[in-house]
Length: 321
Ligand code: ADP
Ligand code: MG
Image (cartoon, rainbow, N blue to C red; front, side, top):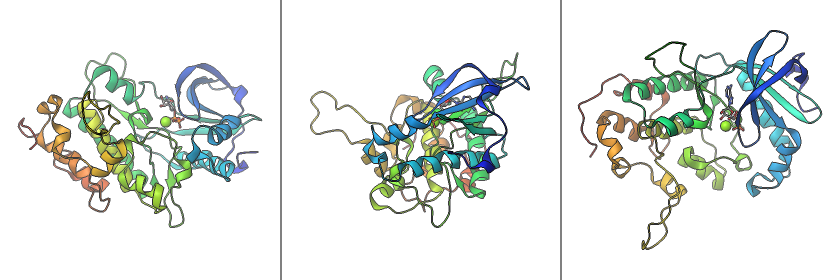
């Protein structure tokens, strides 16, 4: 028995009929399902218990610890426990959790517009007004989560889902929902993000998160602001500020690794690409205030919400110097 009975409802996998696959993550498959008794469609995250354990033991050496079972179990249950308490328009809603001999099932609200990641890949950068609307929703959700001492820690465009535009709508502002609380934790004095749970891409990880890995020091909610800063950069340019690079032919020395780049923070060089020419200085300034390496000097969520760019003050076009 993986799941404590207090978390379980009366449902079982047989109540749900698979419609199609929605997405795959590192440890789970997410399916679109029909709840037969009610006819309502949901998203169901299916986790293979064996795979969870094998994945931890094989592949990534950092994931392999003596307490892997307990670690993974607490991670999965934490996702359910956290999701269950959240009631916010920009966070996916928890519906149910149950298990059978081989699998764990987490049922949640279905979001049908796809990942923000795919949207950026397909359509390119967001217009500033759309990006602001997305940022407002993300920051409002973070404000809500942080007030409840929940840190998400894995905010990236794969974990942000777009709502489907209303039928027949010609123009609409993008609505988003935060998904994947698999790395989220309730912040408390005794809770530290342990290196053993590192499995994802570092592209959105704050510098202090990378440090924690070696030093074992804890950090707090400021890491979510960093990730949202990376996201804002990505929304406005459709490319990430930090990424592993291939050395150009003839270049001397290896290019800076993604870890080195993250630890150096953001600067004017990050806005050199022509895509940034049509972005307001206020937007670039806000990104720079969020991507401050020292978490104590970084904008808080409240400060980010009050930032001039968030308040809708788009200045005349001009480049950031
Ligand atoms: P993992 O923890 O393995 O990354 P996620 O919870 O991020 O798993 O889910 C993996 C993918 O499944 C997401 O990136 C998204 O494409 C899709 N997905 C997850 N939850 C939902 C949902 N509620 N509605 C629609 N699609 C979802
Ligand atoms: Mg995910």
